[in-house]
Amino acid sequence: MEQLQDNFGRVHDYLRISLTDKCNLRCIYCMPNEHYDFMRNEHLMSPEEIESIARIFVAYGVKRIRLTGGEPLVRKAFPEILERLSKLPVKLALTTNGIFADKYINQFKAAGLKSVNISFDTLQPERFKALSQRDHYTRVWDNVQLLMDEGFKVKLNVVVMKGKNSDEVIDFVALTQHLPIHVRFIEFMPFDGNKWELETVHTHEEMLATIEQQYDIVKLADKPNATAKSYHVPDFKGTFAVISTVSEPFCSSCNRMRLTADGKMRNCLFATAETDLLTRFRKGEDIYPFIRSAVLGKAWKLGGLPEFEDHDKLMQQLSARSMIKIGG
Image (tube, rainbow, N blue to C red):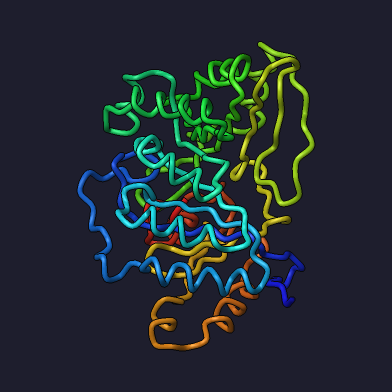
C-alpha cells in the first residue's frame, strides 16, 4: 500500500474531519464573535461525500479518524455520518464540547466509538460562562460523568490562558485522583481573531513547575506521533498531559491531516494554504493526486509560520480562517 509520506519522511495516517463550523458555545479563543457568517449547507460535505472522501484516505493508509467542528454534534446528520464512518477499518474518535453527548451516547456505542475528548476549560461555573459566553457548565459536567460511567475513555481538553484559567491547573490535576479521567492542558495558540499574545501563553514548563509544588509526578511513555507529553501522580486513577504547541512544538513526528467542513484539505493546523478536494470530487476528478501533493507540500514546522516570538509577522501570515472554520 502506498503511504502518504511528506518530504521529511513523516507518514500521515491520521485524518481529522470537521463536520461543521457551527457551535453552541462562543469560546473566546476559538469563536469570540457572537455573530458569525456560517457556511451554507450546500457548501458542506454531505454524509455520502464524507464517507467517500474518507475511503480514499483510508485506501492510502489512514488508520485514525477524529470528528471535530465547530461542534460536530450540532450537525443534524451527525448520526448518519458516524454510522457511515464506523464501517471503515479505522479507529474513530470525537472532539466535542459535551453539551449533546447524552443525546448521542447510544450512537457512540453502536459505532464502536470508545474515546471522547471534551473541551472543558474551567471547573468554575461562572468562569465557564465567561469563557464560553454560554451557561452550560452543569450540563457538560454531567455528561463528562455520564461518559465515564458508561465506560468511555474521557479526555478533558483544557486551553490554559494566563489571567483567565491558569490558576486552575492544580484543581484539574486533583480531578485525576479519584476519577479515571485524562486531563490535557493545551497551550493557548494564535488564530485569526482570538487576540493571542505570547504573554498570555502559560507554557508547559510553567504548568509543570506549578504542579510539582503540590504533587510528585511521573513522566509516562508517550505513544509515537503523540502531541501530548503525559504524566501521572502515583496512585491516582487518571493522568494529565500538556500539549506544548507554542513553547515546545512536536512537529517532527506529525502524522495529521485535516479536512474542513467544506472539503478543503489542510496539511497543518497553522497552514496558510488549502487544497480544495470537494469541488474536484463533485466534478468527478481523481482527488488522490491533490491529497498527495498537499502532503508533499507540508512545511517542516508550524505550517511554515515565523517563530511565535515575532508577533506582528506571525499574525499577518495566519490564515484568515479562525479556529472554528479550520476545525479542531
